[in-house]
Amino acid sequence: LIIATAASVAIAAGLTAFFRVRPTKSILQQQRQSQHPVPDLSQLHATPLIVIPSLSSATGCTIIAKCEMLSAGGSSKDRLARAVITDAETRGLLIPHESHYLVEGTVGSTGISLATMALARGYRALIVMPDDQAREKYELLAQLGAIVEKVRPCSIADANHFVRVAERRAKEINEAGELNANGTPIKAFFVNQFETPVNFETHYTQTGPEIVEQLKSHGFEILDSFVMGAGTGGTLAGVSLCLKQAFGENLRVILADPEGSGLFHKVKHNIMYSPHEAEGTRKRHQVDTIVEGIGINRLTSNFSQAIKLNLITDALKVTDKEALEMSRYIMRNDGIFCGSSTAVHLVAAVREARRLGPGKTILTFLCDSGVRHLTKFWNNEYVTNAGFKIEGYGTHKSRPTT
Ligand code: PMP
Image (cartoon, rainbow, N blue to C red; front, side, top):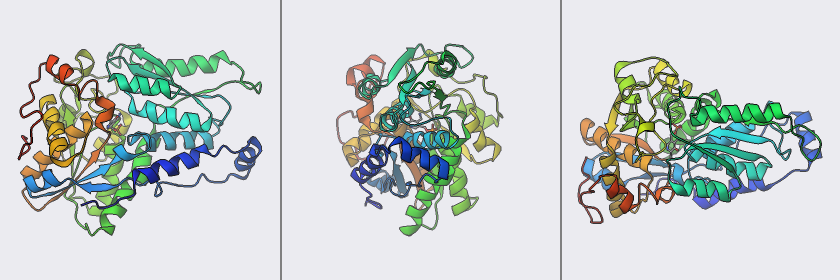
């Protein structure tokens, strides 16, 4: 059932090889002078597509998942990190091995991808995160040598929001003008994943075409729906545009939105760009999040690309309970140990399949693995204390509950 088996080992090896090669300064300088383009290694890093057996047989549809969890850094954020670093280097805003800082506000995955690449490129990673995320993400960042600053979750309108603190830290480093070992000032680059156009462009020019090529080379000429959540919205917007161009305007794009996120409401009411507006059934920063990585209360410029281009067909709200049950269901039935955002995607994909009826083809993303969520989403005590009684927990179930 595996469509593409570009093994994760190959991805890891390719990425590591690319970044482990530390060219001497003179080679780097020559490269800069001769304006050599950075090679596009996106095909080397292609993540597999798989058909999810249990959900496909339960719905009569073909439910396909892009396995971004198998990227070297453990999530699709490797693509964003690689593209942002490459772009900043090309524009001369970052110079490898000069102790420059990559600074970012993230709930984890982007920070982990940046920290990995920072090691290989000779940067320092300064990561600002809300303090309510799964513990293993902070521990992994620390092991990767990143400086981690934790802040209380709050609205983006608050100056202590993790994104705004990150932006401030970058400014402070640039103003301090500290010198590195070579006597040149240490610069900081604020990645700004939520707003940077590099995010949307990367998914439009790399992730999207990679999927189209994989699907078409395996005989899929028709794709009926693409189901995706939004953190920054870059994946949703960039991939949707590419897929619509490849498979036609009739492709349905379904936003999978977790509890507490305001995006569902905005899509349903077609509310346009408003960066500081907060509107949701329950504000995510006011509750302990069960689902991490997707669902926010503002329209980032990456997400609003999808609204401006009229890409989204519909939005589905997925409860935490449904996500928890789905994660346990596909673990028992398919051996897929997924993270929380992936579980939201799969619930929405099944609901979309039931709505469309048998015979359709639906694509979604496996964003990260459950290993990143062992102390929260995959911790029985945490889940029980959060008030959830997971039906059928630990048992084999013959039908998904959604
Ligand atoms: N899944 C995970 C695990 C994530 O961390 C994120 C983003 N933080 C996403 C999905 C969503 O991707 P995007 O930012 O492109 O919307």
